[in-house]
Length: 300
Length: 300
Picture 1 (cartoon, each protein chain N blue to C red):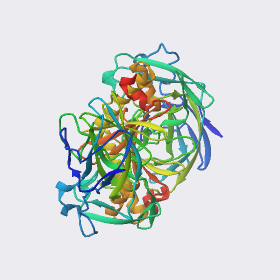
Picture 2 (picture 1 turned 30 degrees about the vertical axis):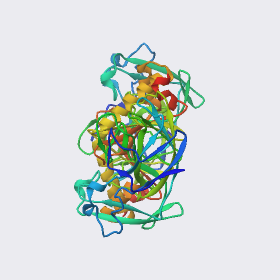
Picture 3 (picture 1 turned 90 degrees about the vertical axis):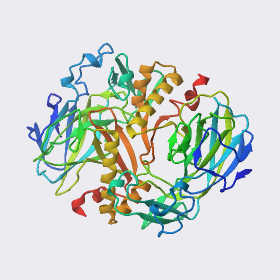
């Protein structure tokens, strides 16, 4: 198995990026992912205010996947997300959903034991996930701290072990990079961070030729989810609705209007995060109502 | 069991309302709830544009609960929501999250059979719920189509059979009314309606003396949820975050700052609806992290 070491990091998803590793489709790759702070926080004495912000949200990569070309879809099966024995959560004035109410910074280092994160007297079950994952965008460059159509800092807890992520390929090789893993998080990630960890992430990469998706899609055991972002949560939710109605119409071969009614019955709009430069939502549909094949509009 | 017939309806939750029935605490009551259109749509030929909008979202009641006084909490156990053999979903230009894209109205009447709603070739599992439920507010009057601190049109799918709803009492007797039941809905209720039904709703009402909650709380088998509304989804989500952090701080006896970190790990921000005059969100917490007793701030 090829692996990419933790020194190979990017802070921007750009159209032109130089890959550090190359694999054939259907190969398995290990990414050594740094935590969101690039390991700048090693004790509770270090606050978010003291770290070098230019080194936040490093993504390990990029990986070139042979045969992936503009107009294809990169299919990423998340096989394993390793968990260290501690994680960090932080906040600071102006950070997160209630940043205007935060008077001082706080850093908390939490033990991770036997499947749980220990927060004072609470044992919180782990659900390891990838916060930042994306490919080279079409035209613009995006900080790894920002989510958009190429992926990026989506902070979506269903991008987890066992899930399959689909990203739209815009540049030759796709150019996949990832980082900012969490041992768990709540929808919203309200204080701006979660149980932040370094991790070894093992994925299988495949190429779907001539696929067509506009936004990232994640497939869990039961659901298909379209992940959208916007300036506000309202914007992200509206875009998620627009996308899922169009997908239901094409995927189920019904009129747009009928798909709009159906979405009101079967789609759950969910919040991924409300604390990054753009906010992220997802429209979740049971897989028996909308499969990922249904979303890939070129196959319909 | 006392029951309130479907002719006893209100279109506003007001501070001064005349009750139509009176019960002692711990009694079980049946509400004959009309559908959201007050039965104006009986065929697919009737569109949302043709109905009398002054008769939308009728709520059956109000019920006076003896002993309930300002500063108490009304505890409502939802025992049963009956399901008829068909439901209606509608949309129209300007209605719902994508109202600007809707070119013509559509009404669809769906059969309900053996636990499923039939939508073309799809069988969608039912999860019956109450869309409008509330008590007399403190000062202002609110249309039954609007959600707020008194309850109202919260369109929250966890206000369902088996759940317990807690509402802040502001007037003597509480003055409970409910309607707008759905056989199922998706989070968001994106097209403005769901599987709309008339229903007989059976609840048990209890009074918690000197409780203190600001917004409605719903308790499911696993979770405690604070239901908040705002002009935008962003506003509702921020208020849900503010409420849940304060509740975690008091309920778990930790600092506000620690509660903010904890919320980022364990709280799921969810969308209830984005289509009513105010938008509704909820902050969901596992019950072993925050019990409803933890939220009742006078008991801590």
